[in-house]
Structure formats: structure tokens, C-alpha cells
Length: 192
Image (spheres, rainbow, N blue to C red):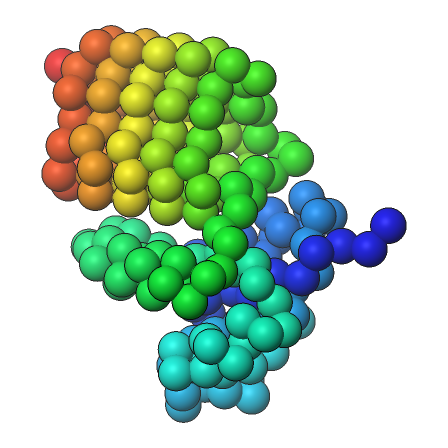
């Protein structure tokens, strides 16, 4: 059975982790990475940087699937901009889920979202588009995560929380149940 081709958008540190998830998932063949023009021809792990943003129309002819592999810490503006650009060209942005994650059959995940290794997404969770659910994040029942959010490593969202659009939720942050979370939540925070 042949795998679908996919291109990765962004060649930094988050890209390394996404490559590992995609290789473990065994659903896609990575055709290359899009990054800054100065990096064309260089490699990220075993994959070549094949172009820059200006080449996306041409790359679309080779692969109509893409995943954004740029992280979101200080700002998600670049992720949002690239998401809109890729959609305007016609790219499909699939949901990518590590086979080492647990995702309830009763949850919903929007396009362009990645679920990293050992994340746990429980029943009746709704996750929007273009999100990062990072390694070992725990998303409990009935949580709603809106578009363009990053739920960081080893963080916990307890039952019934709502995470507003564009939120960064830091590593090891923990929320009380049914809280509304918005903006930038620093690592180790306790949200009551």
C-alpha cells in the first residue's frame, strides 16, 4: 500500500519532533521541508529543505498535503499566516496523530492539528484547527480547545475547560476543571 506524500512547513526544532511522529505513524512519505531561502539544500534530520514560501505553488503540484512544523511559544502569528496561505493554495492539512498517543473515539480534532507522542485526549474533547497538542499533554473529558492553540508538554487540562483561540498553555501547567483559559500561560502555572 503506497503512502500519501506530505511536505513539512518549517525546519526548526518542532520539525524534528513532527518528523518522528510522522515516521512512527507510517501514513505519509515526507517529500521535503519548506524553510527560509538560505537553507535550501540543507537537511533536517534525513530530509532536504526543498524550497521556501515562494515555492509553495510549485510544491503543491508534487504534494497537495502539508503540515505546519513551526512551533508556537512567543507568538503563533507565523503559524496562522502559513495556515491561511496553504489553504488559499489548496493544500490539505491533515490531522497527524502519534501512534503512541491515546485519542478517544468520542473526541473531535480539527484539520492541521498535530497530536504528539504520549498525549492523552479523553472523551468528548473538541480541538480546533492548526493546534499543537504536545508530548504527554493530558486533555480531560469535555475540554474545548479553539483554533491555533499550543498545549505544551506534560500540561494538564481538567474536565470541562475551555481554551480560547490563539492560547499558549505552557509546559506542566495545570488547570482546575471548567475554567476558561486565554492568552499566554507560563510553564508550571496553576489555573484556578
